[in-house]
Amino acid sequence: MKSRRFVVTLFFVFLFSVRLLGQEQNTTVAFPQYAYKPDKDYFKSYWTAIKKTATGPGHWNKKEWIAFGGVVVGGTVLYIYDGQIRDFFQSHRTHTTDQISKYGFEPWGSGIYTLPLLGGFYLYGLSARNQKARQVALAGTLLWGC
Image 1: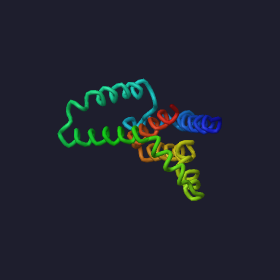
Image 2: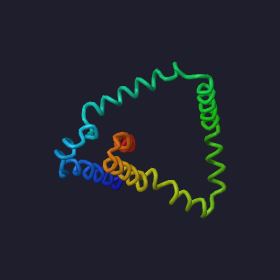
Image 3: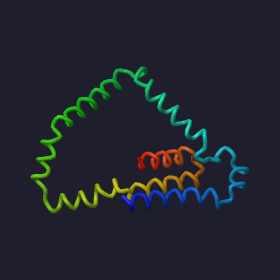
Image 4: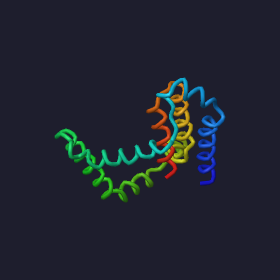
């Protein structure tokens, strides 16, 4: 848990040091349409996204409702059989499956893969002047920290 907090802190220090130590005036003046920072409008965008998500099903077509139903049914089946699925995989563990879990899945949850990926995505957004890439990276770090 301490390493996760350290990585998150390090990422945000790096993220905001780019804004603080960089030549912000030149970037903002030369490219005002690309200037972006997590300000009031950024956080208000979360409210807009929540409203769109809540009202979205009212606009779905038949295909989208079928996909939603499949997800609900699949999730329910997995929930009902969760204990049996866990018992099956625990009773069939091998050294190989343990290694796959340790090196393939655990690093995603710990941030070893996630934060560098999000950081790279943010840097791409800065260099390509892509506001959406920066928003995705910031949202990912906010969601990851929860």
